[in-house]
Amino acid sequence: MLKRWQVRLLDAAESAMKTAYCPYSCFPVGAALLTSGGKIITGSNVENAAFGSTICAERAALVRANAMGNRRVKAMAVVTGVVAGRDVPAAPCGSCRQMRYEFRHISGGDIQLIVATTSRKKALLTSVDELLPLPFDPDFAGG
Image 1 (cartoon, one colour):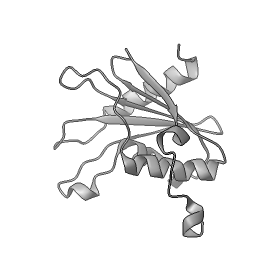
Image 2 (tube, one colour):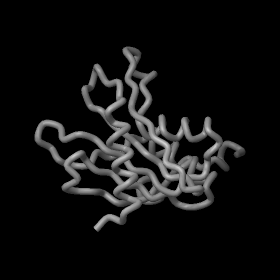
Image 3 (cartoon, one colour):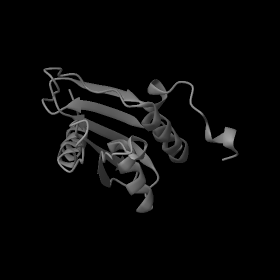
Image 4 (spheres, helix red, strand yellow):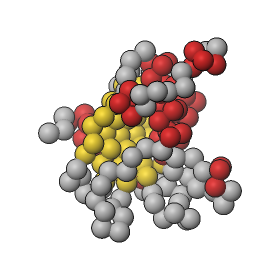
Protein backbone atom coordinates (compact mmCIF):
# COMPACT_ATOMS: atom_id res chain seq x y z
CA MET A 1 0.00 0.00 0.00
CA LEU A 2 1.40 3.36 -1.02
CA LYS A 3 1.63 6.17 1.49
CA ARG A 4 -0.27 9.39 0.92
CA TRP A 5 2.85 11.38 -0.04
CA GLN A 6 3.82 8.69 -2.57
CA VAL A 7 0.38 8.90 -4.20
CA ARG A 8 0.69 12.72 -4.36
CA LEU A 9 4.07 12.34 -6.04
CA LEU A 10 2.60 9.89 -8.59
CA ASP A 11 -0.29 12.31 -9.21
CA ALA A 12 2.19 15.11 -9.92
CA ALA A 13 4.18 12.87 -12.29
CA GLU A 14 1.01 11.86 -14.13
CA SER A 15 0.03 15.49 -14.48
CA ALA A 16 3.50 16.32 -15.84
CA MET A 17 3.17 13.49 -18.35
CA LYS A 18 0.49 15.55 -20.12
CA THR A 19 3.13 18.13 -21.08
CA ALA A 20 5.43 15.59 -22.76
CA TYR A 21 6.58 16.32 -26.31
CA CYS A 22 6.98 12.88 -27.88
CA PRO A 23 6.04 12.96 -31.60
CA TYR A 24 8.50 10.16 -32.50
CA SER A 25 7.95 7.51 -29.85
CA CYS A 26 4.41 8.53 -28.81
CA PHE A 27 5.53 7.44 -25.32
CA PRO A 28 4.81 10.25 -22.84
CA VAL A 29 6.57 10.10 -19.49
CA GLY A 30 6.11 12.32 -16.45
CA ALA A 31 8.35 12.62 -13.42
CA ALA A 32 8.00 14.36 -10.08
CA LEU A 33 10.66 14.63 -7.44
CA LEU A 34 10.35 15.46 -3.77
CA THR A 35 13.09 17.67 -2.36
CA SER A 36 14.38 17.38 1.19
CA GLY A 37 12.53 20.66 1.84
CA GLY A 38 9.20 19.10 0.83
CA LYS A 39 8.88 20.78 -2.58
CA ILE A 40 7.57 18.80 -5.58
CA ILE A 41 9.28 19.56 -8.91
CA THR A 42 8.11 17.98 -12.17
CA GLY A 43 9.43 17.25 -15.63
CA SER A 44 8.34 15.48 -18.80
CA ASN A 45 10.17 13.92 -21.71
CA VAL A 46 11.04 16.15 -24.67
CA GLU A 47 11.99 14.39 -27.89
CA ASN A 48 14.00 15.82 -30.75
CA ALA A 49 14.51 14.77 -34.37
CA ALA A 50 18.20 14.51 -33.45
CA PHE A 51 17.49 11.65 -31.03
CA GLY A 52 20.62 12.27 -28.95
CA SER A 53 19.15 15.64 -27.98
CA THR A 54 16.08 14.02 -26.41
CA ILE A 55 15.72 14.44 -22.65
CA CYS A 56 13.87 12.00 -20.43
CA ALA A 57 11.29 13.12 -17.87
CA GLU A 58 13.48 12.18 -14.92
CA ARG A 59 16.43 14.22 -16.16
CA ALA A 60 14.11 17.12 -17.06
CA ALA A 61 12.86 17.18 -13.45
CA LEU A 62 16.39 16.97 -12.05
CA VAL A 63 17.66 19.76 -14.32
CA ARG A 64 14.68 21.91 -13.38
CA ALA A 65 15.27 21.26 -9.67
CA ASN A 66 18.93 22.17 -10.07
CA ALA A 67 18.03 25.42 -11.87
CA MET A 68 15.76 26.25 -8.93
CA GLY A 69 18.56 25.57 -6.43
CA ASN A 70 16.96 22.36 -5.13
CA ARG A 71 19.64 19.69 -5.32
CA ARG A 72 18.69 17.53 -2.34
CA VAL A 73 16.21 14.89 -3.49
CA LYS A 74 14.37 12.43 -1.22
CA ALA A 75 12.17 10.62 -3.74
CA MET A 76 11.07 10.56 -7.36
CA ALA A 77 7.96 9.20 -9.07
CA VAL A 78 7.78 8.29 -12.75
CA VAL A 79 4.55 7.59 -14.64
CA THR A 80 4.02 6.22 -18.15
CA GLY A 81 0.95 5.17 -20.07
CA VAL A 82 -0.19 1.64 -20.78
CA VAL A 83 1.36 0.77 -24.15
CA ALA A 84 0.09 -1.98 -26.46
CA GLY A 85 -1.75 -3.60 -23.58
CA ARG A 86 1.43 -3.80 -21.46
CA ASP A 87 0.50 -2.45 -18.04
CA VAL A 88 4.01 -2.68 -16.62
CA PRO A 89 6.03 0.13 -15.04
CA ALA A 90 8.84 1.17 -17.41
CA ALA A 91 12.38 0.75 -16.14
CA PRO A 92 14.51 3.92 -16.22
CA CYS A 93 17.19 4.19 -18.89
CA GLY A 94 20.90 4.11 -18.05
CA SER A 95 21.38 7.87 -18.39
CA CYS A 96 18.57 8.55 -15.92
CA ARG A 97 19.97 5.99 -13.49
CA GLN A 98 23.39 7.62 -13.59
CA MET A 99 22.06 11.18 -13.27
CA ARG A 100 19.82 10.15 -10.40
CA TYR A 101 22.92 8.66 -8.75
CA GLU A 102 24.70 12.02 -9.04
CA PHE A 103 21.83 13.64 -7.13
CA ARG A 104 21.92 10.80 -4.62
CA HIS A 105 25.58 11.70 -4.05
CA ILE A 106 24.69 15.40 -3.62
CA SER A 107 21.76 14.55 -1.32
CA GLY A 108 23.91 12.39 0.93
CA GLY A 109 21.47 9.49 0.97
CA ASP A 110 19.58 7.09 -1.24
CA ILE A 111 16.60 8.34 -3.27
CA GLN A 112 13.39 6.31 -3.29
CA LEU A 113 11.95 5.70 -6.74
CA ILE A 114 8.28 4.96 -7.42
CA VAL A 115 7.44 3.85 -10.97
CA ALA A 116 3.90 3.19 -12.20
CA THR A 117 1.61 3.36 -15.20
CA THR A 118 -1.46 5.56 -15.40
CA SER A 119 -3.63 2.59 -14.35
CA ARG A 120 -1.72 2.35 -11.05
CA LYS A 121 -2.41 -1.40 -10.96
CA LYS A 122 1.26 -2.02 -10.24
CA ALA A 123 3.89 0.22 -8.71
CA LEU A 124 7.58 -0.51 -8.46
CA LEU A 125 9.22 0.80 -5.29
CA THR A 126 12.97 0.79 -5.54
CA SER A 127 15.97 3.00 -4.96
CA VAL A 128 18.91 4.51 -6.79
CA ASP A 129 21.28 2.05 -5.11
CA GLU A 130 19.19 -0.94 -6.22
CA LEU A 131 18.91 0.29 -9.83
CA LEU A 132 22.57 1.21 -10.23
CA PRO A 133 24.73 -1.04 -8.04
CA LEU A 134 27.97 -0.11 -9.86
CA PRO A 135 27.68 3.61 -10.66
CA PHE A 136 30.30 5.88 -12.12
CA ASP A 137 30.85 7.71 -8.86
CA PRO A 138 31.50 11.48 -8.92
CA ASP A 139 34.66 10.78 -6.90
CA PHE A 140 36.11 9.07 -9.99
CA ALA A 141 35.86 12.37 -11.84
CA GLY A 142 37.38 14.37 -9.00
CA GLY A 143 33.97 15.57 -7.70
